[in-house]
Image (cartoon, rainbow, N blue to C red; front, side, top):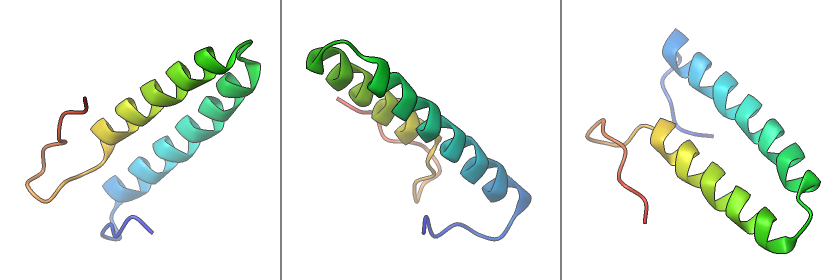
Length: 63
């Protein structure tokens, strides 16, 4: 799905992202307001992007 090589490093990345998304879902579900949920989702996306590889090997900054 991510187009990663079949390596130990890729496996670790997938495990970390899977865990991160599960915990993020629980955090969003626990938010008391829609705004809190939006902020939480935006931050999770920002952090996940930092973990994902890019063609030149450096994650692009997020706004």
